[in-house]
Image (cartoon, rainbow, N blue to C red; front, side, top):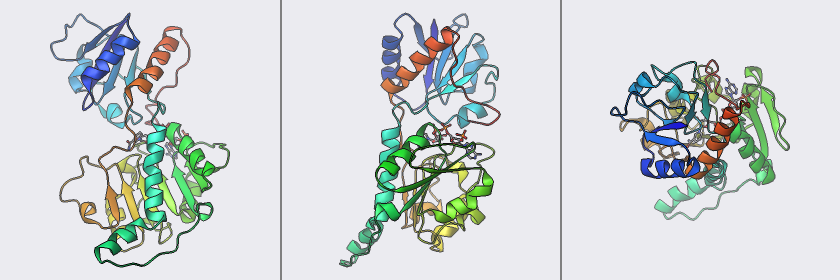
Length: 309
Ligand SMILES: NC(=O)c1ccc[n+]([C@@H]2O[C@H](COP(=O)([O-])OP(=O)(O)OC[C@H]3O[C@@H](n4cnc5c(N)ncnc54)[C@H](OP(=O)(O)O)[C@@H]3O)[C@@H](O)[C@H]2O)c1
């Protein structure tokens, strides 16, 4: 079996070593323009591949996306649309994503944003905090990550509600689906967590009207994709104090451009798309099991390119 690998920004040497060890009977090659045209891969393990990669590969049985978000791959011109795409389904990311979101919940929930500012003025002034069980965390997107994150917050005693495209049943979580429920959903949240994929349907879902549904001291944590939030509407809501603050990991354009007003906002924490990294060992455990299933003709969940996730 032939495996083709290319991952922009990831540690190529470590990945190649790990793939060769996980699939010792396979011939694993790093893609480059010098790769022999006669060498055809059965499976490609990719992250942000160049457009040229697909030009000479005619035998692919599946493409594995080395991350949870498939928006960049789906947009890539020249991608063979008949080849199924399989993405990482959690693959060890949930503890990282949970930590990231919990940090945001605690930072604003325990007033660390205010105390940081007060420290600069040497001001000793306690603020009341609300107990977890009266704080409502709303999670947009109840997929491989959202479901687990929702459950973990519920287990910590938070009030948790979740919103997805199709109906869900998750213990300890109030679940809603469909746009009809979204405004009321947002109005109940103290913290809104975006874990939706970047699709045509989620583009600017959180626009000015929807952000206006949020409570005045609500917080937005965006660790899904930047395109779900209208950046101008978010900036206005933060500037006007309509939102307490935001923890933002993902943006329309990454890196966030130097002149973007969000960089300078006191009530915003910006991180460079680090909420939940792809973990080599966990990712390869899923991928090798999926390859085995595919080789046996068994079902493996795949990306629906019409839905975009
Ligand atoms: N910042 C980071 O470091 C980082 C790391 C990993 C992932 N991510 C992002 O996090 C996102 C979530 O990851 P995941 O693996 O949990 O994704 P996933 O398994 O594909 O789940 C996506 C969820 O979004 C829901 N959804 C999709 N379109 C919708 C719509 N139009 N209206 C309502 N709900 C909709 C889906 O609903 P159904 O369940 O009904 O289909 C599903 O619950 C990824 O797409 C990725 O972009 C970011």
